[in-house]
Image 1: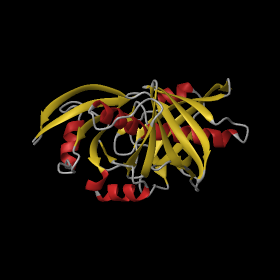
Image 2 (image 1 turned 120 degrees about the vertical axis):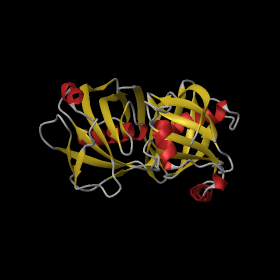
Image 3 (image 1 turned 180 degrees about the vertical axis):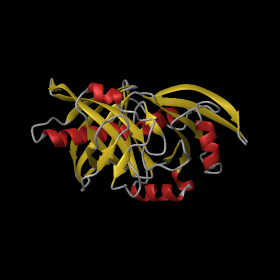
Image 4 (image 1 turned 90 degrees about the horizontal axis):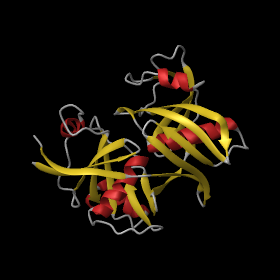
Length: 291
């Protein structure tokens, strides 16, 4: 099989994208692992398949939620496991659909896209895309997180933004730099479905010109450390606002190794939503022979 693909990224969180409108060419987990291998494959944090929602059972659920959700983002982690959502991936996915003539979306217009976490609205802006990640949830419990090169276990805050996250506050940027995320952080109790783990440091001052500021690194479930994680950025801003108290702002700037993303919390009919804004880039296209 010859796969025609596009490589794209959002603040360094990179993906291999391909079109399969009729849902005829799903990739096996071992093929995904081979493609995402950074030494012997193309290299990526995950694979995104563009499928029409009517061609997938999960897509049928998306259409039932919103009949305008023509396209489904079939996202799989680098280890071949499916993921519910990807905040950077969905922005790159929208860019890919536009570039390949599968979608027309002008600046200021919004498109509904199906995901395993439900339908997400993506708006095109002058310098990128804004995605409404929907309602979020503060998780109960008091998980402890052990990270290699950090001397003691740290308390974490569970946040669900369509996929599970545990956010850990660190003392300073030196601690953030010292953390060794080539090893999987150990969480107690172990999350049933796993979780992304974000390490966060508030900037000084925390709020400048009405915007909250934090720095973050992340270990993604099924991937490892990535240069960015869109839903993780949102979860980190939400957790920091929670810790900061009622006077904390609803707009945040989050610096990750791959760049900077914006987060906004806003009221909606079904409760508070969280949005993510940032660039989405397509790097190159090519073909590769698959075993």
